[in-house]
Image 1: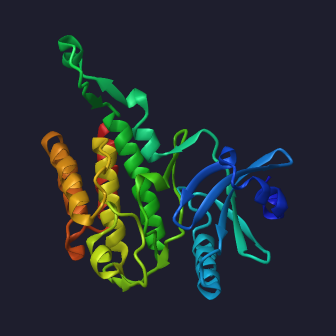
Image 2: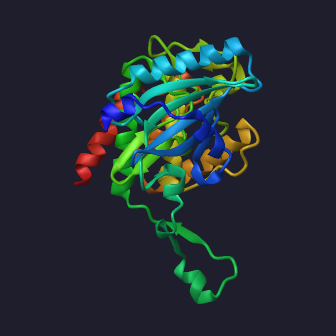
Length: 302
C-alpha cells in the first residue's frame, strides 16, 4: 500500500468532477477542503487547495511552506500522515492536492465530546417534568486524561522540530478508535526559541482558541500554541462550546466560566489550564512541563 500511495497520480478530472459534492467531503479548513478518494481498492484522504482569489506568488509560497512543514513531521505517530502532493493548473486556477491516509471511523474531537452517550439527562428534571432539560457531561476522567496526553505528546514533538501548529482546536484533532491525531498544518510556521514571538502578516488560528498576542498584535510563537491547547483542554474537560465567539473578550469570558467549573471539581487540572491561558505569554508553562504533569495523572489513574 505504501508504494501505491507514493506513486499515486490522481486523475484530476475524477476529483474535480466530484469535489463540489458533499458526499465525498470529509472536512473543511481555513486552507482547503479534504475529500475521500478511492482507487484500486485503496481509500485516501485528499486535501484540495484552490488558488482562486489569491496572488499567485503568495499561493505558491504558502504551498511550499506547507509541504516543507508536513515533510518535516513525517514519522510522528500523533500527526495525520502525509504522503505526497500533486499540482494541477487550468485556465482559471491552480489546484494543489495533498495525499494523506484516510482514517475510517474517525471524527474530530468536537464531534467526539458532543456524542449523545457522553451526555445524560438530569434525573431531577425528569422527576419534575421540567420543560428545560439539563444535561450532564459524562466523558470519563480516564478518557479525558488519555486524549490529553496523546495531544500534548504530539504538540511536544512538533515543537521539538521547530514547528508551531497555530490552529489547535477540537476541530483539528481526530479520534480514530484509540488513536488521537493532530491535523491541518495549513496555518503552521517554523519558529526558533521557546519564548520568541514572530510577527505574521495575518491572523492564524481560530477565534476563541487564538492567543491574545496574535489576536491584537499578530504575534505568534510556541506560547501561542500553549494558549490554544489550554482552551482545547478546557473544552475537553467541561464539554463546553464557545457559542458567543464574536470577539476575543466575550469568548474568553466563556472559557473562564468553564474553567471555574473545572477548578471547583479538580484544582490540579484547573491550575495547569489557568496557567496555559495566561494573558502574558511568558508566564505560560512549557510544553514539556505540561506533558510531565498529564503523564503523571495518567499513571496515577491506573
